[in-house]
Amino acid sequence: MAKKQFKAESKRLLELMINSIYSQREVFLRELISNASDAMDKMYYRSLTDDNLTFNQEDYYIKVIPNKEERTLQVIDTGIGMTKEELETNLGTIAKSGSFAFKNDTELKDGHDIIGQFGVGFYAAFMVADKVTVISKSVDSDQAYQWESTGTDGYTIIPVDKEHVGTEIILKIKENTDEDSFDAFLDEYQLQEIIKKYSDFIRYPIKMDITKSKPKDDESEEYVDYVEEETINSMVPIWKKNKSELTEEDYINFYQEKRYGFDKPLKSMHINVDGTVRYNAILFIPENAPFDYYSQEFEKGLELYSNGVLIMNKCADLLPDYFSFVKGMVDSEDLSLNISREMLQHDRQLKVIAKNITKKIKTQLLHLLRDDREKYETFYHAFGRQLKFGVYNDFGANKDTLQDLLMFYSSKEKKLVTLDEYVQRMPEDQAYIYYAAGESIDRIEKLPQTEMVADKGYEILYFTEEVDEFAIKMLRDYKEKEFKSVSSGDLGLEDESNDEVDEKSQEENKALFAAMKEHLGDKIKDVRASKRLKSHPVCLTADGDISLEMEKVLNAMPN
Ligand code: ADP
Ligand code: MG
Figure (cartoon, rainbow, N blue to C red):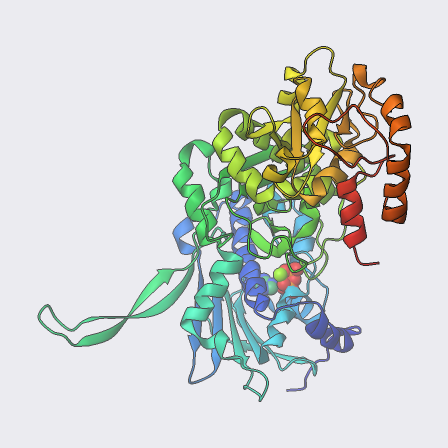
């Protein structure tokens, strides 16, 4: 029988696609399973309007059968099947999506459950197979047909026998090459892993015959192999379940199953939004920062699902940098995906979701701060630095989001306090929020510069991280109180006017100061007599905006 050629630019397109659209070839299985799921959904929709059809849930399943000897992988479904014409048009024309047409034709509002829409997913099979055979019997036809293709050189269609309505796809898995092994796609265990990874939440059971072993009999030490059919996917995604059905334990299990981290999450959030953009999300605040968190290697992002199918492992656009520590997933029916399902065509919906999520994370963190201080401090020890970077990096643009989440060590409380707590406690005559920067709390306590402010009975925030002061410069103020370094020239204290320069001592020590200045050269700008000091003979102060600590950091930066 003469081979029919793929329509249009199919040949070139196919080659292009196979090599470039999908970043990982294991996704071929996701595509075939999604198609099978779509085909069964179509039966369901058909049954709603066709009185001759009843839809028995248990008759609908997907079966995956590897065969190592034959190097084949079979994917079988009991969906709506394809007629000869449909095999031609749907599989013979790339970018022809029967599912998309179905969605557009159908009056059913629920049609958005159907996953396919671009008409290229099927061809992903050619990333791992050098021959693909599709045997299908349509619900609308008594005759079954077999479509077969070795990829770029067209396809054949012949009539065949098949008893039940549905589709069976047989992939002839590629031979291994020196660089490349395709054996994973024939391996029971690895196939299960791929199914769980990408298709865990497909609403129909995905079954496999799993080889197991058991003792031959009660007394025997000898084991025998046997085969048992198992459903590999969990089918109902936890995020679609009712919050009231779930316990904290369930979320922790999910966190660990998903390997979001090896720790236990400090807090989990379950979000169901039914607004203009519908989505479900499960998010976690981890307890510990991953080892690479504060390095270039760290990649932020949430898993992104479109209607139960994993599209992206790490969708960075869903999280602002300052909340990059959040782990979890988002599932939405409203995403407009591009052909590979891996990139998003329009990111409007994504932006709406991201904004929404950011707000919720902030609210949850504030609740944690209010309700469980200890946990919040654990969180803050792990990720507080990232919040401060967040304030600094966007030139204070995230001030409103972040300022209430910040904490600093307090000279008075001897523990971390929030800016709000600081301001609440301020005596009426105190005009500024004072801070002192240094390497450690110990060191700061010994700074002569803190003496004046502490003597007034004012609280001082200790900045021990390099980013602290930079972040505070971006905030400028909190609740209209400006920040002031204890080492700034002008402390803004009422009785400072007579502190400025002690004229008498200045006059008396003129010669000494001149000698000091000469000795220190351009390391300093001036030497002055001051009333600021009590128990220390000398201290350094800074003129202008840049404090001594900041100067140190700036000088240490590579140019
Ligand atoms: P998409 O799923 O984006 O529409 P695909 O390339 O994955 O594109 O599939 C092309 C079309 O082939 C589908 O729209 C569907 O009409 C048909 N098809 C593929 N697999 C099956 C199947 N298992 N059962 C029925 N129809 C299928
Ligand atoms: Mg598809």
